[in-house]
Amino acid sequence: MAKTILDVLKGEIYSDDGLVKTLLIGKKIESRIKQNFAYVAIKELRDGRDVDALKISGLERSVTLFQELKSQGIL
Image (cartoon, rainbow, N blue to C red; front, side, top):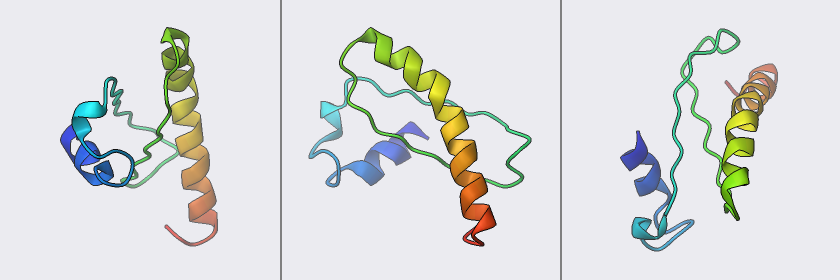
């Protein structure tokens, strides 16, 4: 999963994936999402506190985005 994400973003977000110093990846099965769905968020981390904030907010953002796209008939 990590390699795919890094490869897709190369050339768009950064020139070389060697520039990525921190990569947080999690997989969670969520009952509110009944199909495969990937959510990628990119954030420049300024200090260690940002990591915890990103972990907490990431799941809820992905569920909200999924539900919006589903209601619009995109998914």
